Structure formats: structure tokens, C-alpha cells
Length: 308
Image 1 (tube, one colour):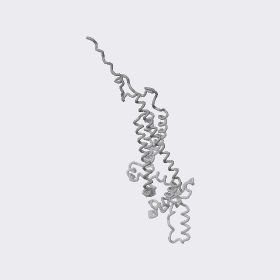
Image 2: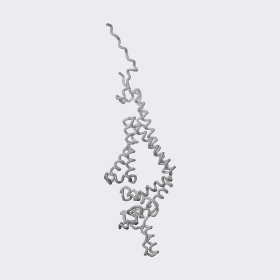
Image 3: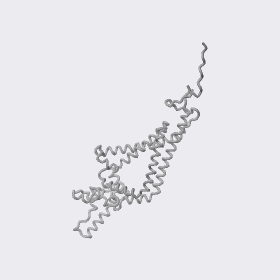
């Protein structure tokens, strides 16, 4: 019986692409499509953000563990926006995720991580632009919201050590006291004039950071603001009462911090705008470089095949 000759498979049938067995072969089918300059530029750029985000995240977690227990966190759940470490945790987490996905995506040539990285940067850029447009369009409502937020900050001054440090630093740096003036501290339970009924030593006073030149002192005088807002007693003569008011007024800052903040923004509007544009350009460049690297990786994968 004559042997039948087996048909030779077509050349196209000999090339089988197996996704599960992809291997990187430099120069397979020609020169590599992946630019080392783009690849390691994306990696180096995101290493900085990865380390920065990791550091912010660690610092925020450490701050929360140091000052709070689980029960305290639950009791302050409605006032989490007054805790300065939460914005730090959110910014640190986002920066960490962006840096990590950019590093892994570029170094391992992983298109999924690069897609996630580009998408996250794009969403962040859209959110920033939307926030800027909203802030400009609703500036009156935003001004009222900031005022209410700062009033809550004054009320919660003693409730959070990080918030207290932030307020003291702001008042010393800008040489101001309270939101609109020193009398705003009457909203705080400890500094309220009514606190004299419970014999509070801080009643009718202000924080030490409201005292003139407090930032220049090597040793802080934490009692300098006690009782400076208490009005003179009725039995005092008009001259003596006026002298006492002038002495107390001269020892503390009387201008509010919100007008100082508004003045700083008006004087540095160009600097703020340039900073925002630079941040947006960095994000756009990050998206472009990541998409360029992703297209190079896909072009290189098109050259991988197995012959059977």
C-alpha cells in the first residue's frame, strides 16, 4: 500500500501567538520599539512621587496613631475635616498610588499599570480644573464656606494638637489673631469671657500666638494672652480704663487672619496661577510620556511570535 504524503501546513498556520507565553526578545523582528529614554524618564520621574507619597503616608499614619485611639476617632467622626492629618493622608495616598503605578508600569513594561497611571492623572487634572472653575464661579459661596470652616477651626482649637499647631503657626507667621479679629476667640470654650464663671485662667484671653513678637521669643510665654479681652471694671476711672485697654491691645495682634489671607492671594495671584499651570503641565507630560511608552510596548509585542 503506497504511503500517502502528508500535506504541508501553510506558513501562516505555523505562527501561533500565545498571550500566556509572551517573552521580551530585544530586536525580535528588528530593532526594539521601546525607547529607553522614555521608559527610564517615566520611571525616574515617578520614583520621586512614590517616595514622597510614601513619606507623607507614613507621617500621617504616625500622627493619627500618636494622638488618637479608635474610640477617639469615632467620637470625632463628624469633625474629621478639622484634622490637618487627613488631607495629608489623602494627598500622600494619591501620590503613592500614582508613583507606584508609574514605576511598575514603566519598569516592567506593564500596559495595565500604565493605563491606570494615565487615567488617574487625567481624572486628577479634570478634578483640578473643575475645582478652579467652580471656585471662580461660586466665589461668594466659597467665601462663606471658608469663613464657617475657620470659625469651626477656632472652636476646635484645643481639641486637636495638630490643628492647634497649625493655627499658632498661621497667627505667628501672618501676625494676626482670630478670623476677623481677636474677639473671634470668644467662640472658643476656653477663651470665652463666660469661662470666668468656672474660674478658667484663659477666660477672656487669646492664644499665645496672638501676642506681639511671640515667634521671635526663644522661650514662649504661654500666659501672655490671658485676660487681654476682658473689659475694664466699672469702678475704674475712664483714664485708667483707657490705659488698660490700650496696654492689652498693644500686646496682641488685633487684625484677623482671613483679611491677611485674602490680601496675600490678591498680591500673589500671578504666582498662584503660574504654580497651577506648572502642575497641570507636569501632569499632561506624565500622561503623554506614559501613553507614548504604552504604544511602544504594544508595537514591540506585535513582533513576538512562536514558530511550530
